[in-house]
Length: 58
Image (tube, rainbow, N blue to C red):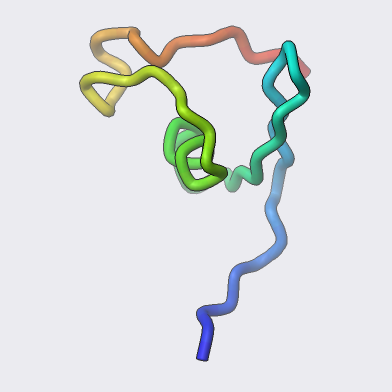
């Protein structure tokens, strides 16, 4: 039996390369990136060190 996973609220896209990942409003984007199999720089896991910062575009 598998756990039900609702459809993503957002679909994120990394540029360049157009890599896509599913995202939900109740979880951090870093977690969504990692669950999508994308390697994103991080260190502190809470945004304090700013390693994971990026520009968010519409």
